Amino acid sequence: MTMALARTEPVARQSAGQLGKAAPQSCAECPIRHKSVCGILPPDRLRQIEQMRAARRLRRDEPIAWQGDAGRYLAVVRSGIVKLSASTARGTQLIVGLAFPGTLVGRAVGEGAGYDIDPVGEAEICLLPRHGFDALARDYPPLGHALLELAFSDLDELRKWMGILGTTSAGARLAKFLLHLAETFGIATPVQGQRFIDVPFSRQQIGDLLGMNIETVSRQFTVMRNEGLLTSPNRFDLLIRDMDALRGLCQSKRTTSVLGQRG
Image (cartoon, helix red, strand yellow):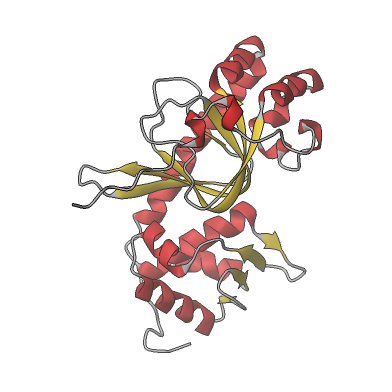
């Protein structure tokens, strides 16, 4: 008889005693503060956040929250990337979005998370108790307004992600994904129109994200290299050599012009 392996308990369920220590720097010194909802808080309100927060460094696939689970905490992504996924009626996992540094994940109000929340690779998060954060938002209305803006931004991000997954051409789907990464956290180079990306996904993970097999992903990367759109000195570093051309490929219905070439 086979036994099912126990799932690791999400950090959002854990008690204060199970969590890590506070982040090493103060909230005022946090490098991603202005990318998050904490950016609108004055010094006295930041001190309230400091008193309630806990920091956690996560291993790959160490869950933050399960779908439908209220949990005790919200999380602000400090480093790394977090994926949001939902279970379908067939029991498969559909990735509905990615959260980058500065993003608040989890449900501040309501009964439970609408999706599973897991890191892609290693990640750092700041955990904020739901009830304490909700009380702060009620007491400081600008924070409540920022959360409303965040909800609309999340809807926009979901629409972007659905636009990526709804693209029929494999090449255009990968191009939209890379463009999304480049515009979200890519680093501009001295050469105009170029951006550097540290991609924290393997080819297999990109295939899982985009609904393609690993052979198709690898083939499309080869095509883009051959056409001069990008170079990849290793598995995770990418230099987008022509952002405009990448944007143009996003609109293309062709699979590739050089499908038979090998890189």
